[in-house]
Image 1: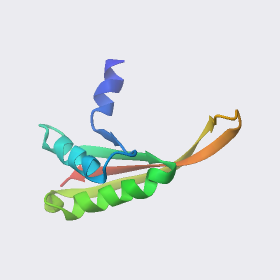
Image 2: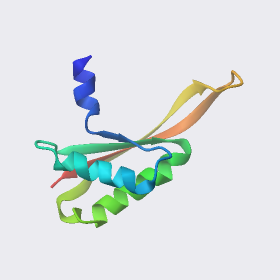
Image 3: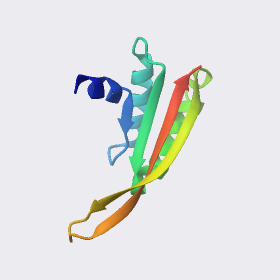
Length: 98
């Protein structure tokens, strides 16, 4: 269990909070000692926001020290409120310190 927590420390999950909260969260993660990568994760309608966060981080104040390492797309199946199974797209964008 502790291993999963350690692994999730460098993950920023994108949702409905104000946009700049996510940009700041990525910058704070990179500011921690020993943090070499941050993963930005999103599903469904928040995928475009995740891409925007990546772009602002890469072109913002820490732009010269961050690059995109990997982008992984996938889909997840889950049961909605009506009990029907639906698929939702997901994205994981891995940013790394240069």
